[in-house]
Amino acid sequence: MNHVIAKLRLKKGSENSKFRKVLSNVTLYSLPSDLNNNVVYNPATNLDEGEWYSISEFSQKPFYLQLLEDYEDSVAYNQLEAAQTSNIDYLCTCQNGNEFYFQRISKTQLLEKKLITLGDQFTYNANSKNIVINDPADAIYVKSEDTLYFKKLSAITGIFKGIDELFKEATTTETEAFLAHDFIKLENNFCAASVKQANRKRIALAMEALNSFDNVQKSTVFNTVKEYCPQLVAEDDTFKIESENDLALLLYGIDQRFYTTPDGREKRIANSIIRIV
Amino acid sequence: MEIIIRWVIQWSYKLLLTFNATSLILVVYFIKGRYYFNCLDKFPIWVSYIACIMCPVVTTAMSLFLKKFLSYDSIEKQPLDIEQANNSFLPSYLGYFFVALSVPTPETLWFIYFILFVFTFCSQAIYFNPIFLIFGYQFYYMTTADNVKIFLISKKQIKTTKALVFPTLKRINNFTFIDVEKGG
Image (cartoon, rainbow over all chains, first blue to last red; front, side):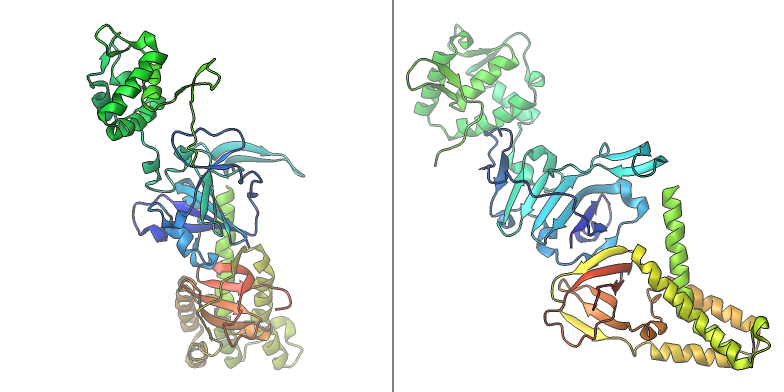
């Protein structure tokens, strides 16, 4: 039998005591048929339509949920009370004893609206509380494969605490530190505050790459950037950064995303990469 | 509004269950005091007694019918332990009967019944109702696979936990579940 378990946002109590049973004997989700099209999660990889990120051996990861380990029977969980509905953090739906579907419940998904229900009878409801179910779910854990599938990491960071370690976004201090490197020359009042999310994500990747380079690698990488983006080179042989776009090019360069097609005709940037093992 | 209606339904259901579990004390008292129904005064007094006994049976049947509105649950992993609990309520029931038999006046009875009603309502023993036995139900204490102790009402005669699963249960409260599996 399928069960829907809710995790509540409560200040008091152990993690385990925050789960409530919402519903049973319903089928909210269906297992997507395209789960086979998955790529191992990597912040440098963008998904195509119909693709999923996957994390295998999920139970060995530090952000594995105790709920998935402990879940045996729904009778262990207390019934959700009506007054607690606005405290729901996320829903975990167990189907066929093997598939766990996770959905974050944000304030926007908890509809507290005046509703007219259309059906056999038209009914008006002045202050209904409804939860909008997203199919496919934000994350799907298949126990027999011990694999977590998801499309957007930011949607599930609230569910799996610590999973955001996989996705680093540079903090303001880190961004400032990066922009202060002596190979960068800021112009046009460009500063750390002007760096938006996409570039912060790339800065985190670039910092990691830079730290792993030796001097030879560094000069090779910088020379490639100069070759592909001559407009970035300043008179004193540093990179002048005037805009987000300039910064993005430099960061792509550091992450070695520039390439030329094998026939030598076209220069390209890989905005998403998958490592060939 | 819907929340209030649901709340009222839940509370009335709990009140009905509490009444079922405690009403035998009233029945015993009425029989002891040779009370009879006015409408049945043409019949011998034992007809009134039977009618009196039938009242909690009928309300219990009603509560069993209403169980279909409760929420579903299931136990799909083999439980760690199961123990029959049919006899464990006998002492408390004998207690009820002795109280009913020794109460001197109706006022005392109503007060004692009120206290008993409140305690039964607040405790998790709401469904500890021997009339269920007449309907073929058995009581069990069960420890589930993840070590949660629950109270289970089922028609099954259970002696072992081997291959024991309950695919369709109904939740009476967070500790009490009733098995509604057909043919069980």
